[in-house]
Picture 1: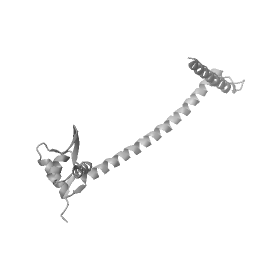
Picture 2 (picture 1 turned 30 degrees about the vertical axis):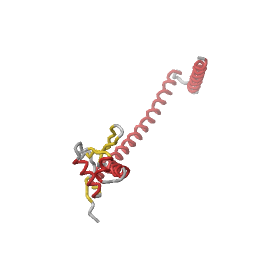
Picture 3 (picture 1 turned 135 degrees about the vertical axis):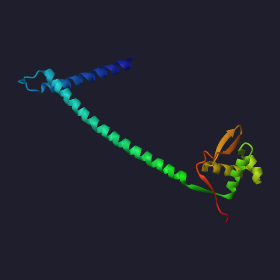
Picture 4 (picture 1 turned 120 degrees about the vertical axis):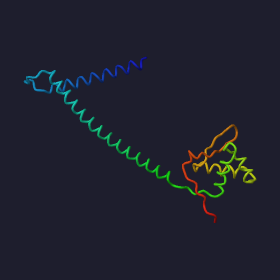
Length: 168
């Protein structure tokens, strides 16, 4: 509680100093002036308000410029995304076979073990790597159900077109 009381006293001291400063500014007016001290204070307040308003106008102009820049960056990003959607990504014949296998499966979802059996791989690592690469490319969606990870091809959500690379 003593800390708050000290803070309050410090704030009161600051306010007293500000009042003294304003009083000194008002006393700078010559004594033979016909305007009372209250009018001098009002003039001072009006001048301060005008300076504040000029600063606010400058700030709002800068903010509007920044908003225009941000919106132009957003528009460029949207255009880049639209252009990226139009690119076709070449896919190897093996990857195309995997995608066809997923499409033809009963639930249109497979796990690495099923792909391992289909492709006659000796271990699951190769199957997992193939499925993960297709998932990162945007062709497959990944779902974890229990301890297994399943992959599904969703033509509506696939962002790139399939092109089978020619045999070499």
